[in-house]
Image (cartoon, rainbow, N blue to C red; front, top):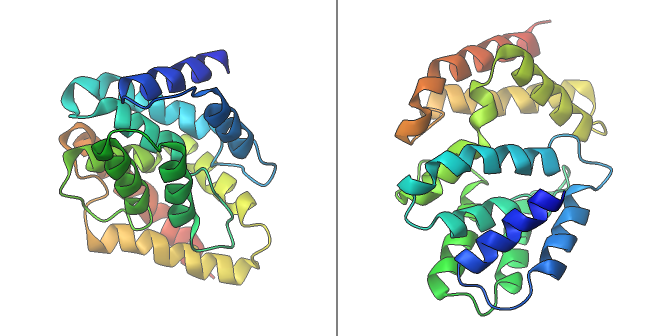
Length: 205
């Protein structure tokens, strides 16, 4: 936890945000520890930061991307459709005084996670790929992800869950490649395998 606080503070200062980052990171830590979360937790944040670390030399604004990653699931209620929008609002308020380009990148990247459509900004695309990195994980790790997301949607009846989840997974298979930046291209085949087998299970009688 101390390491996460230090990494947030480093990104805050590196992005040129004025003021003390401590109240902001403490609020984020509380948000990601909410009891209804099973996947969208601090582990997800830590895993994404680990994915971003080796890509810093390839990013135009690595600290702004890191801040976007921290905020992207700050608001998370599985039964609402405006989580990304509300997370972006939180970020914009927290980053008052930051360079305008930083705030714009952060809010744009958070908003883009609502659809994960391919993005023209390479920094935003990298964050989208980090968010979907688990799709290309080993099958056992991918299955843990699916089970965790199902726990978050425990209030949704199983037939409704299966239909809704199948539609989401099918969109990744049918609409576009899962990943849009070159550093994730080698995960595409495994992602499509994971999605195909999970979709088959969801659609089986």
